[in-house]
Image (cartoon, rainbow, N blue to C red; front, side):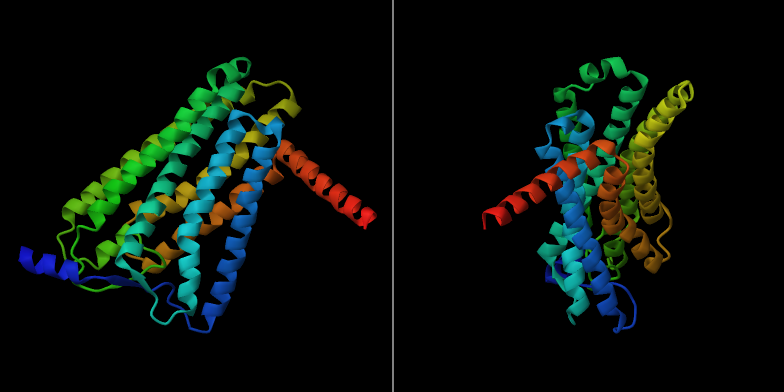
Length: 320
């Protein structure tokens, strides 16, 4: 039996990404929608990183975390979106075995890193609001770098474990993955191996990644709300809530979709695809908009950059 499974596993050289089960006529519409969203992701996140790196006033812990959030959003959406768009035009919709491994590995790395980074951002807001006088002492450059490096490290370890465990399965049932990218639950569906151990380990991994980060975020915001409610100034209270509400919005969308995707029984593949869109494309698109439109410092930095470009253009036209 082991020999047959090993043989079947070794024969798999590629997979087929089924994608969305819609009429072929709608593929063009979906392609245009993906293209628009991905273009906004590129523009928004590259723009956010550029603003943060070029404006000295944004050289603070909060913007250091925001810059890394934009980097993560840009990369994990780039792991998914281009291949999905290609498949809207492709008849084979195939992805190589190595390509599938790479896609799962990179996506898992960046999505886990984002979860830990959001927890670090919640802690940063907790210190900024609950202990503002010691903010720059406690949130030192060294600590911020360690929190970001730790996020990437946890993402890398989790990704190695999840990817290696997923691709030790035997895929002798089918090559067709009922999803628009390589994810471990759709891959488990097409495996002919005993999945009990794999499902238990996957659930354990998800639990030790999601629960601690959610606890840090919830506890941080409990203290934040308690502190903000003690502020007598209406303007000060409004400013504090405005700073945190954008972060809470991002966390709610991301974790809501992830919990639905990985903790709810896997009985509705089409709903899972829609939930996946929330954290693969919607959240990376919304993050720069939320943090820029609701952030006075970012808007001022953007006006400064645009003002310089307009001045430079006018100068060139004057010379000509």
